[in-house]
Length: 460
Picture 1 (cartoon, rainbow, N blue to C red):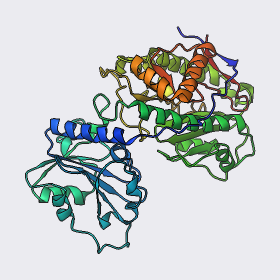
Picture 2 (picture 1 turned 90 degrees about the vertical axis):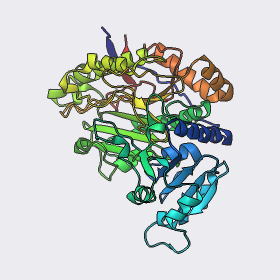
Picture 3 (picture 1 turned 180 degrees about the vertical axis):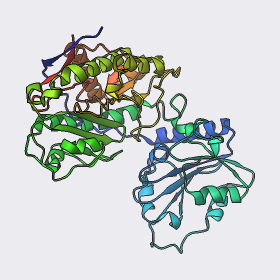
Picture 4 (picture 1 turned 120 degrees about the vertical axis):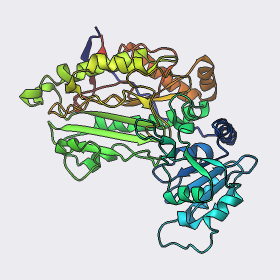
């Protein structure tokens, strides 16, 4: 039986990056080559990747190009230079792509009412890229489907109808190819290069420090806007809207900040999601349980303690070769009472998109691999006055070779990771396997009362 207590804990300053990791061109070259091979192995004659402002992860993974205002298409045909189709405002930004591509202006991808007279018809562009009647074309959008959802899931495609209709009208077979990138076991993005993991750690350091600064700086009477300013946002790419809510607004879950003034005694929640990183915490704006309504003064005993015990056990069990079903079972063992309201997967893969997919579900035999970036994401939605609690942070799994490459290539980040591991073991009592690399500056740190941010949960 895991026992936990609320104790005064000194949270170290893990530091912020002074070096920014980037993804070199040769990594993108290898990714495109792997995508070609995987498409051929899947029986595809060509691959089209669709992207837009909200759904750019697969495209950015291959090209470093993420659509900012418009949509875009990336076409891979065997023996041909890749084609990137962009709208009016995407052409200049497309030169962020570090590998050789053919850039094609297709103005219907542009915003409504912008010029349209300088583009070839879609059928002509597709033919110039090497697509022909009779081909089987994989279209990767941002989701894939299974037999649970559809009788013919490969025909459900997350891409504009005009593209899919044109492919089929021209005599091609269009099928969903998103799993090629996103499947939690063998998708191309399920396992990351050391360069990508270093980039994710960079982003996670900033996202977690922002939420940490909120917890340690928030005061009653601030507006939610003023609370967000504590995050010291720096312009890094967001993978989801910033969430800041308090009081009655917390029942909406994902609402944004407002001019509402937060008051002592209220529930409060903050969340910042960047590419490859997401940090969230929830609690009450009080110093101690005595300030809570009488009916929920057992907040720590009833919700926080069992929740932290569950997450601590999850942390200690996760590792390379562990089946996702085993992690799901740990959370169910601790939090199976309907009161806790844990309904989503207790953990998932994270990438440029905040939720890529998850090998963690009931009965899953999918095993975790070195190079995976994983979000610790166990959400109790009680739907009661007890509100919620949250330890949402990013980690990665790395075998000995990957750890050595990380340490050699990114010593500053490696030092932060080792300091976090030591804190989790020495201060919180959570013993991680060697392959578990915590990316957060709030590593498993859970203060239920935000006006006493140094009082946090630990494992006895």
